[in-house]
Image (tube, rainbow, N blue to C red; front, side):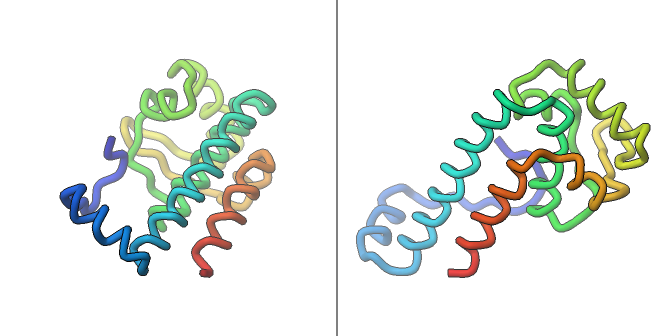
Length: 140
């Protein structure tokens, strides 16, 4: 599923597999990606069980901001709900609290983060865990 506009490339599986077996840069890149993905999946599972929906929303928004390098996120509350495994109404309520605090603005299909620092302060520690691992893997 494509969540944010950009470029995508399709490569035949046999080409990727052959390159992976050579044990070069692509293999290490793909293994680092899998490590990052597993970290995020594991942390998401923990987060969903132990933190409020508002904290989870903050974490999700911060991770998106890290990937797109912009304060503007083209997204619907419905998609965020799917990503977090909750109903859209829950996202609407959590986002309303963030909006009332002056952290985000939202208009149909477009969310803008107004105060990243305060958003990060409201997020649970799961964001820092995932971010630290991503930074570690990028540094290699």
